[in-house]
Amino acid sequence: MTSDTDLERTRRFSLAEVKRLLAMVDPNADKLFAKARTVLGAERAARCLELARLAPLTGRWVPTSAVAQLVVGTMDVGADWWARPHEELDASRVWAQTGTPDALLEAGHGDAETEDGDSCLALLGRWIADDAADKEWGRPVDRVDMSDPRVDGRIVLPDGAKAGDRLTAIFAPGGRVWVDVVEREGAGAVASHPATRGAAHSRLGSRLAERRYHGVAEVGPAWSMATAIGPIRLPGETAGRSSDPFSDQIDHDASRRLFEWAKGQGIAANVLIGPWRTKDALWSARHRIGLPYGRPGPWVTFDDAVVAAVDGDRGTLMSALADLD
Image (cartoon, rainbow, N blue to C red):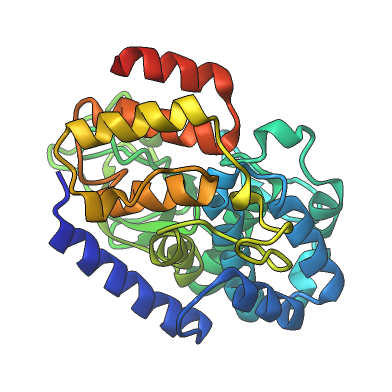
């Protein structure tokens, strides 16, 4: 379980990363989109904001983190990245084109109800993190599953590989692991992995070396950890005003049941600060209580109910409340 001290330490580190990568102190969505207008251009920034508004209120960290990646990434690879066809290394280790970032941004997401981790903006964030990594370290030769327990044979060696070479492989978007080509012990032994088939590679093996993430990949989670500690209001939304989606009332009975349950777990009144009549009050209380990181067991179900209440998912809310009773 992550302690409060660990969590605060992580947030301080994340704030330092945001300051380093985005040159931004006290980050918020208004500052982020203002910088996006400068770096991406007004039209792209406006489209990013339009897509961000499609995300569930509790999931706004996804598009805002992606926009942070797009800003840092565009500063790194250049604005012409948006018009260049993106290429990805497929399962056959062939570089396949997937269209231009501008085309994906314009197309947006097909279903507003699922604008979350697989959203258009999140995908663009992965694209630009990979392209920034390729720019800095060169194109990878293969992909690596870091959960694969094998010591040797984790990649397919390219033609011409020789002992002493150091290659690069993908283990995550914007994440690269270096691979050393080594002479196998027991000359002449042929392993079953495709990398060692044939005379040319039967004597060669591979060993994973260090790995790291590019800054474009790191700024996404850093932004999320630094800013997702309460309601995320997008540009044009003012707390407590009609423009604020977090000012909407939540179901009175659900609010009462959640408040009484949390009170029954021994949470102090100055932490609860109830009753929770609005989405803002409920979502802010969630973070004061220490969710989602610091409380196990039935608090997971409580958190499911809070998320559902804020996002307006009545079916999940009622099911979670029933489990708490």
